[in-house]
Structure formats: C-alpha cells, structure tokens
Amino acid sequence: MPDYFIGLMSGTSMDGIDAVLVDFADRPLRLVSTLHQPWPEDIRQRMLTLAEQRVPLNLDEYGELDAGLGARFADCVLQLLAQTDIGPGDVAAIGSHGQTVRHQPSGPAAFSLQIGDPHTIAEVTGIATVADFRRRDIAAGGQGAPLAPAFHRFLFADPREYRAVLNIGGMANLTLLPGNGGIVRGFDTGPGNVLLDSWCRQHLTEPFDRGGEWARSGTMDQALLDLLLDAPFFRQPPPRSTGRELFCTDWLQARLQQLATPPAPQDVQATLLELTVRSIADALGQSAADTERLLVCGGGAHNTFLMERLTQALPGCIVESTEACGLHPDWVEATAFAWLAKQALAGRPGNLPAVTGASRPVVLGVVYPA
Image (cartoon, rainbow, N blue to C red; front, side, top):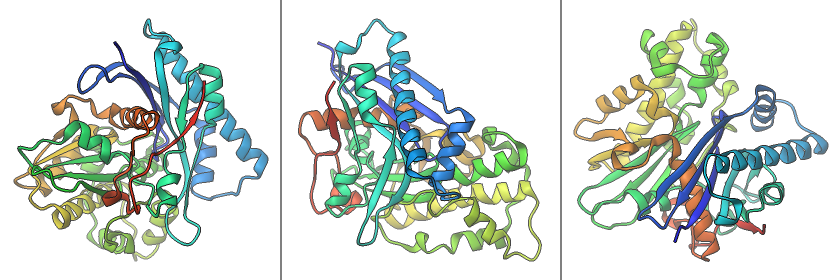
C-alpha cells in the first residue's frame, strides 16, 4: 500500500519552490513526481528585502507576504499532483519548510522565522500540512538547523565507509556519517551559492553562474579571500548555523572596501567560489578528515568548476553527486521535509541533538489538519 508524502522546500537561494511527491512504502523511498516553480522576481525581491533587513516591512506587508507565499506553496502542490493520477486524499501529509526570512539561533531570545502560511496550504490542498520545523529544536536549546542530517542518515549512511553529505544551497552544510555506526554530526560551513549568485545577478544580470564558467575565467584574489575567511563564524565550533543575516551583499561590500584596489568582477567571483570550497574543505578536514566519500546535493552540485575545486581540495576523498546513491541532488532537501512530516505524524523525533545542540530529541513541526 502506498505511503505518500509531499515535501516543499524554498532555501536561502530563494530561486523557487522545490516540490516532491514521495512514496515511502518502497524501501527506502521512491520519487513519484517532482516540480520546481520559480519565484516571480517581485516576490523574490520582497523576500530578499525582509531576509537581508534592507527595509523594514510593516505588519500588513509581512502578513500579505506570508499569505501570498502560502497560496503559492499550495498551488505548487496542486500542480505536482496534476502530473500524476494521485489525489489529495491519497497523500498522508505535506511537509512545508517555508521560506526562512530570519534565523537568529543564539542569544536569550533565539528564534528562526519561516513564512508561507501553512493554514492556507492545508485549506487549499485538502491535505494535512506539517510546518514550523525549526522552533521546537530551538526551544530545546538547539540551533534549529541543519535539520536534514537525520534524513541523510536514514538514506545515505553505509556501514562500509565514512561518508559525508554536503548540501550546497544558499548556505552550505555538512552531515558526517561514520561508517562504524558512530554519532552523526552536522553543521553549516558558511556560504554556498548565496554570494556567488548575488554577485552574478549584480554584474551579469543572470540568476547564477552556469557551470561556474564566469568564476573559472577569473583569478582568485588572495587578499580578498583572507578578509572573507577572517569572519568569526569560521572559527566557531559546531553546533553552528548561519544565513543571509551574516553572509549577504553588504558583508561582501564591506570587505571589498577594505582593499586598496578592488579586484575585477570575475576575480571576485573566482574568490567567492574559493571561499565556498575552502570553508567546506577546512570544516571537513577539522571534523572528519577520514571521510572517504562526499555526496553533494543542492544547486552547487551543478557547478562544474565548484565540483572540480572540491575534488582538488579533498585528495583521497571521492566527491560525487547524491545521484550516485539513488537520489537526484535537486530533490534531496524537499524529500527530507517529506520525511520529517512522516516523522512528525508518527510522533518520532526529527532532530539530532549532536547536530543542532538541542538538549534532547524532539518531534519537529506543527500539524495543520486538512
């Protein structure tokens, strides 16, 4: 008997909604249908304004954006199902990550805020919706991120070798999967595509550097790289997570202004790619130097130059896409939230305290009935 769940994901890259319909009855799982729905540019700019704190939104604007995103998530679900002969009544639940607009996991009033009204999703689709996955972990003393490592363990762990899963979205994060059944760990390494994409939009009016070819045409600037790597975040021990609150265009511009002679735009792009590579390689070397296989997912898996540089920076480690282990890199994160919705309905914890720093395992997400 099928065991259908839907996962919805929109990450810090803010390029669009990834939606998957998953059947967990087929072990370990089967992707039934997938869909990517880009964000309209006006909505994307409003989300960026909120996430990067450019201009404060008043409560009316915030409420309208929350409701509008919820309607778009719901429409994406209906389009996903329209590609199949499966109806809403056949789906157990939707796991909706929502769109993160603020992530402040430290301090006396720690919080993480995602928008995309789950009431609207449940009402429009007629499917129970699980959302607000991060705040229970934060309430238990954790960072509320990363949340995919439990799913990575479920799908990618192998007792025969030490593996790591690297998601390169807007931010990059690692999941460390010891082959001996040891404790799974995970953390954010820093910027993934976020600075690369924003610099590309600014100078080429393109949403991303296809294949990393623009970065390949430039020369890495060591002085700039040193300034970028000097951020305290890179010296912070896990558990740690980050977002656009730190790694944004203003952060980059402040460091460019410290240079006597600004590098050419393509050289900045080459340096930003090297920042992503170095921060990942350094983190892996410090935390799991004996990693034998690095499985890469997220948009960064399509950046040919980035994948080449990772392979060069990690000699002795096999670097390949998660597709080699059965799941296309574009759909790993959305599938993770379908799995987390399944965990929530079963009353099973979805976090790993060794990853987030929470005091205990907790059930993640709030259920909004159909």
